[in-house]
Image 1 (tube, rainbow, N blue to C red):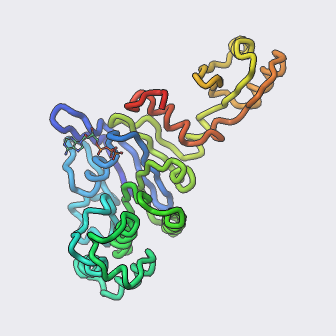
Image 2: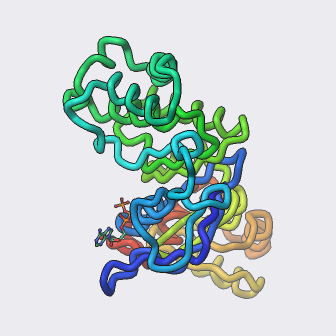
Image 3: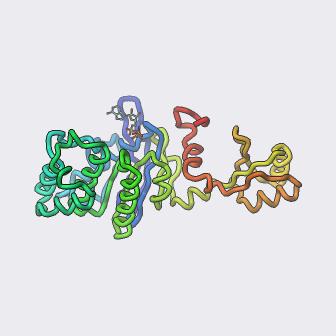
Length: 299
Ligand SMILES: Nc1ncnc2c1ncn2[C@@H]1O[C@H](COP(=O)(O)OP(=O)(O)OP(=O)(O)O)[C@@H](O)[C@H]1O
């Protein structure tokens, strides 16, 4: 379990993380989402003791990372796949990690196999690795100590489609075995497919937090009609609040059955009526973070 409590991190006057609290639970994959500069990496860096908090705390199984006697055995961390010693080979990096954690070096070959790095690739220097290969090596380093918790910043970055599928299966299996996974990603589809719980952050603050199903269900209904004024009028008379989007749709938190019934009774032909969860996480993400997106709602 990862517990973040009233965490704030300031850089001078700039509040990068503003009093956030959430938990990432065992047996679940928690997706950590937010626009560029929202504070995801800062939060993750605080979790693993690389950045001190200004106030509040982030703990792993109730302890600060710095207090863990052999952290790699408890928390697997991948924050920046390129932050490896470029002059070492992949095998050397894993061997150093195994030795630091007091593990047998036989774990190195197990991990190379687990992340599908071939012996030839393992013998190459990391400076000659592709981004996807670095990510695989980073995952191997995170997993080598067989930890119960994984903290991964953009782990799918640079992976090819087969690699993304592999990563998804790996993290799902890890959570199904009782592990806690916290991962940030800009790949909303990936989060939508893999996450059980979602934390959305914007401008350092949490703008939504819950299970994926709750958050997507809360996104409501999207409806389109050639006669928007008539439908808007009928919805208002039916006591249903809505917003009109620039793309011609009306959006409401009411459920599609109610919206469909109101449209029928008002004689409005519909060209589209769908639960907003069909619109998916991207829509939800853009709506929730519209105030904090540098591109604004138009994004
Ligand atoms: N060392 C630092 N010094 C000053 N400001 C910083 C520092 N590290 C981060 N920040 C600022 O804190 C804010 C949050 O940055 P952070 O890297 O946590 O965002 P992020 O959500 O991970 O973004 P991205 O998706 O682009 O990686 C940004 O405004 C960033 O400029």
